[in-house]
Length: 578
Image (cartoon, rainbow, N blue to C red; front, side):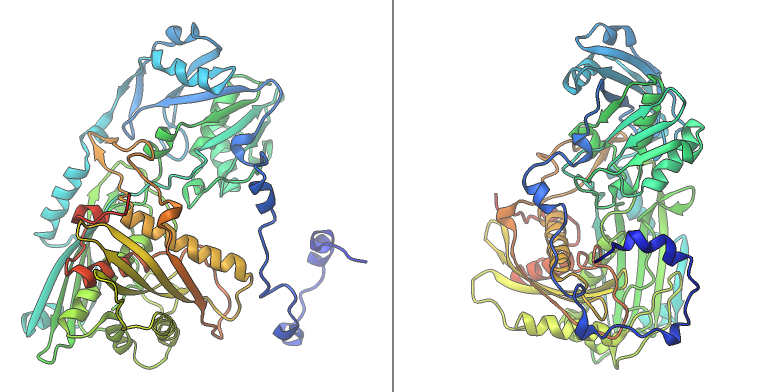
């Protein structure tokens, strides 16, 4: 006889909490689930092509909707030719939707409802919508780059952290190096575009079928925007066709709800086009860094200064554009300065896999590779020297996480052994690059082998990854897949030419021809191993991604002598194979 956990959860919750000192934990040797590879419960259904995703939702009498909005972020609707659309084949409703000018909630737009999605989307061509584009129309990628350069040439707007006498140490340094690094906006670009099906009932309640990563947050946004109580909203959770942080935001859910309110009793399915999905994202923000390091006569680094130019709104860093005080070499260099300046931006941003770390890791670990070269050593040797004896460092400003130098040392030494570092590949134009990063409570060290042809084509035949996420790997199958997916994501971002650019307030990319995702033939052999440590297990969705990008760029430098200081790699003349 057996019972599921859910069948006893309510009764168990009513029991008094036992004294933890009296609780006898199961011996790990007796684990029957933890540590055993377990496949995804939906995987067979996905392989069979069963309709389990949000975009597969079908309800009787359903209409299909598109939502036209301003191409410039923050723009508002001036006029639209609704009558011209009403006469188009299959169109049943067309009306303006007044927004609240909150990107994650509801922006101005025009909804078109038709008997199928294709007819709705075709009808929008007759809309002739006119927009007040607002101040966002003056913003562009070129403008941001110009502002960043001017800010680097001036005094930083704020100091985030200071230790020792940075200016004095740099002035007295036997050697100094300075370099600027920059990375672009990125789009999440999930394969399933944003969609939501909504049914506004005759009694004023609302039913939603929403592929969202944050259903409770979405319900709250809908309730706030439409004047409902959260308990009046029922959320169904279909499978998500890719999220990576994009579906933490629920703008598409609010849009579908606002549209359905105008046709009570009729289900409405809103589906975005691919262009809308790329051009109305909550992007990984761009960032700019200027680094300076000083060395003594023996080549030892004695000072480190970093000026981070980030994107801001209302004087504060945008989501995903804040600084991480865990950045090495914090607390390991006697003279240290972290400073920051901001560029005002209207572009919505949000979390992307390994938020903020996905950009910061590349900039810092790439420059530290330059520091190591200037010091006459390599990056793993430099970091091992900085780490010193195994110990737990105090939590740094702005973070509750503590950094353990022994855990960092463990994964670095592990990946060096896995990759036979510093043994170089024998093929011409090939080299290895290394990077380490700590984020989201995970310690990861990675080595990338890159083969660079004379025409600048870069292949990545092999990647080695060592991670420490605590005492147990709960599901080895899922863990290895998370790591491999992170590596593929990171390589695709850097080597695939991924970059979101802005001109006259508009996103220029609109499909996979101008925003090319990584493909199966470019996937390297990825070796994954974990270092167990006596700490509670932590997550794997984020920390394996950040090190792979600097490891790739450091490998390209080792192979060619050319530094990549701006992402993606095609800005430096390097491309992936066709």
